[in-house]
Amino acid sequence: MKPVGFFRGTWEIAAKDLRLEWRTFETLSSSFIFSLIVLVIFNFAFGFSTIKELGADRLVPGVIWTVLAFAAVVSVARSMELERRRDTLAALFMAPIDRGALFTGKFLANLIKITILQWVVVVLSAVFFNFDLISIAGPMLLVLFLHGLGLTELGTLFAAVASRVGRGEALLATLLFPTTAPIFISAVKCTASLLEGKGLSGAAGTWLLVTIGFDVLFFLVALATFEFVLEE
Amino acid sequence: MKRSPVELLIFALWGLATVGMLIALYLVFINAPEERVMGAAQRIFYFHVPIAMMTFLSVFVLLAGSVGYLWTRKTAWDNLSRAATETGLVFCSLVLITGPIWAKPAWGVWWTWEARLTTTMLLWLLLVASLMVRSYAENRDLGARLAAIVGIVAAVDVPIIYKAVDWWRGQHPILFKPGAKAPLAPDMQLAFVTCIVVFLIFFTLLIAVRYRLASLEERTTAAMERATVR
Image (tube, rainbow over all chains, first blue to last red; front, side, top):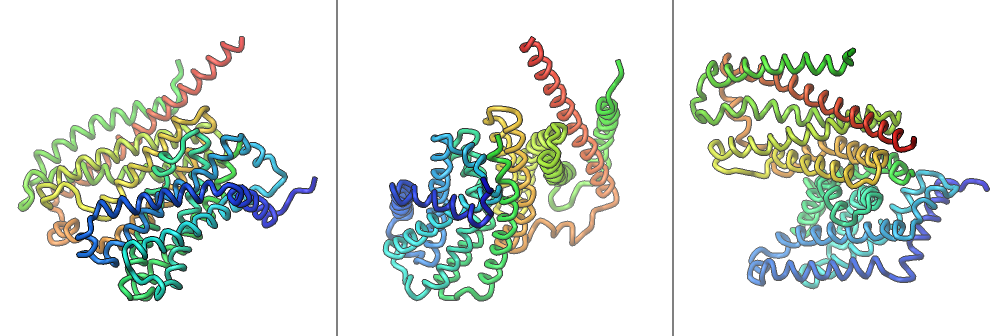
């Protein structure tokens, strides 16, 4: 059998994961419900008066990114957990496919799921915390995408690591949150800048550049190391 | 019995570290003058800063061990990165303990989210996570591979985390002012440099001891496996 090339392989693996998701909506529904619960808890944690006093621009960036961080962990952990439960990791590894495509395929499927989740969470936050999303929708999409990218790259890699040792979300969070600290700092800064009506110029622009650098660097690191995780 | 080079190195380093520690204690507590503003609390700086330097040095050793292992698959590299992770974690914990002891009298708070502190805290978490991955793995080879991956990501990430937190907090206002205003007095300088050298010897000693222990473990396991087969 002729081995499948990198791009075709990436697409096949991503399509497989998305097809599974489309049939059950298992990952999206569980991470969506999880995000909703965390948003409600934040509401209790801060109380109505604190929310009014601080205003959306001070509070919302932190809330959105905390919710997204935990929801991302739930989402990427599931994608590897499914493979582990059905013992399909070995099959993936033996597939006649470019090794790099194993990572990019998983990564692409995770990225699409996380992007959908991000939009839902942000729209919900706009409703709950009452800020004007429509006027900043364009740059907001960019901010969500660029930071979601870095989060998903390391998330995909570490989800595989955690599932190989039979641990789920707890180990994944321990690995993912310290390493993506720069992403969170930048995400909160950029989101705050948008909500304050300053756009993405100035400091937020610099942070976006840092994030792009982070995304490129860790894409390469994850691409280079992912196959060692799956190896038997 | 013929001694291996690592064992000879351990003996030599052990002797040097013992003598060096005694000299360092004398230089720090008796020879160096009392700092005017911070008083006795400042003396912890002679231990705190060299230990912090060794912590970040351990990250480089970890990177070398991790890349070396994934590249060559020789367990010697994995033993090195295991030694670096554990020694690094001990030193990192010491930094996080000695830091607040100094910070409380000097800054008035135990903890502040300053770049160095935050980075050290995150590094501590990463080293713990790496040990967790290693111990959860069902066999040695898998643990070594996964820990090497975590090690590489952590080592590449630490400088980025440091820069990011630095920009996030703005420049740290208090940490460098004492040094900038009045450079260290000659006796302080002497104590400080001695401590760096002594801790470097001590750090190398710990790595060497842990490395040797790991190779012995490896040999014992191999011998036991052979015995079981027979």
